Image 1 (cartoon, rainbow, N blue to C red):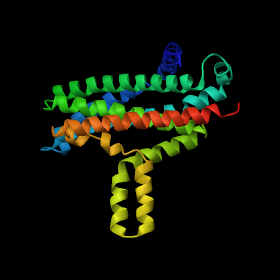
Image 2 (tube, one colour; image 1 turned 90 degrees about the horizontal axis):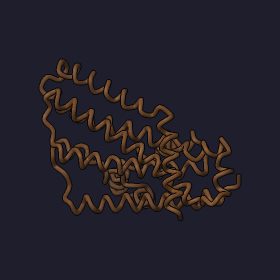
Image 3 (cartoon, rainbow, N blue to C red; image 1 turned 45 degrees about the vertical axis):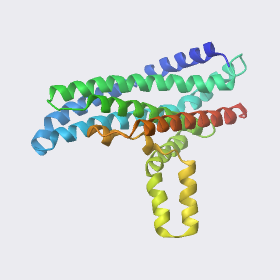
Image 4 (cartoon, rainbow, N blue to C red; image 1 turned 180 degrees about the vertical axis):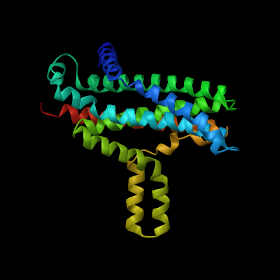
Length: 257
């Protein structure tokens, strides 16, 4: 693989996503927080600051997920529909460089998106007089970016072999199930049914455990997991991303155009 070609594809993908007016998400986020900061004090007198803190980081996560999945599932299909993939793939650019470059380009957009929303979030919290644990929130936001990177890999994996609509639905399914996989595992144990236990255990092993990367609630209360657990979650996410991209590359390289 050639790093220069990967960077070129990532840069091109980055510009394409930015041109899709994706940064309007930032305006929506700012408007949401400003409205919440005005409305919440009148309906939740004693808990408005805590709710605003939760709402802000939750909105960053949710908006990032929507962008990662909707844009990620169309990254490859868009190239196929525009026939540009017919020009790119036969060139010196190989399939791995193409997929990895696309992933890096979207992750770069998501990172900037989260960074700008974080600045707005902390700024509005400060103006509203809300006290917040800066260090814990920043760590939680880093893990949000990590989760978005993983979801981008999921979206690309589905996008290389199915339509954008189906890939979007499957990606949202993985997102939801990924946050419920631990509960499903416990549910299987409660049923004491061997077949259901095997099914829930299999789902837990196959689906990404996204709760590992969900530190929002802990961060708001300034209670984060131990450093060792954070490192393990980081490694877990990175390995999962590598696995998904490898699957994407394998499937895409076998497609006939």
